[in-house]
Image (tube, rainbow, N blue to C red):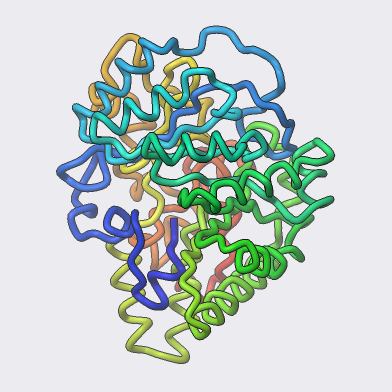
Length: 391
């Protein structure tokens, strides 16, 4: 994650201490040398929607072999022992799972911060209050546009209105909530509308995701934004973040899954405010770029461990058979070993980029999806050869 708010204004939000920390640069298995990674658990593959870019390829049906309540609690015990700071309950749609609140509360009791990633359509006022009462630190609700645009992506008429009700219910009970928006060629024009929406609805956080070619998202490679459109998106995000700050509206604005965003912001700021640019460079250097397989990992509904939630075709082991920590620190798997020290393995533009230390090769799954080679350059890098020092 790239915190535009933090980089531009030094605003401090939860998570910044994990993202921007000198201790994280020396960590090979976690967010810092003293803790494990942030973990996303796809707690179920079942979903009440059918999003066109779903990396899990989820549908409204029951899937076999998902972790039981007791198996999930044992997994949480192991994550707590490894000092995992955050467990993100995702799906499918996690709120469909009957024991999700029991498990989230259990994680909190073990010192792990529980968060939810949901489509928001099932969150009634009573459910929002329960989410708050059990101590869920944050609820991220996916919207990929307003009204018809979102409904088209979600595969269901009325999905926007249901998600909006879920957001409003969280706001009403004081539950920390934010939006998750995946940028692509079909919703690029919605960016300004999303900023207007979060202001109107008193939402204080939004994450703009870059499309990852995984699951059904593999079918959208040709529908991703162009390099020029990525720069256009960043200009809109930066402009609106600055506008919020000028008007005293404290909003946490982040971009996700494309670490050249931090470099772009640095280079842009260098032309206008060299002192602030130097501070940005120091922060993105501490962040270290993409850290899948290091400070971020994923567990699927059946207990298999992956580098991240988008790379589920690569598996390191199963928490039913071994503790997560033992799997995560076992570098006998060549991909896991490579991700912990990937710079010598990277190819193409990534291998020669002068900002490799602050990007770390960006997202491997996109490189593999387009070229067939896990270590090839990320095609979503929109920086020019000149900007990355190749000319």
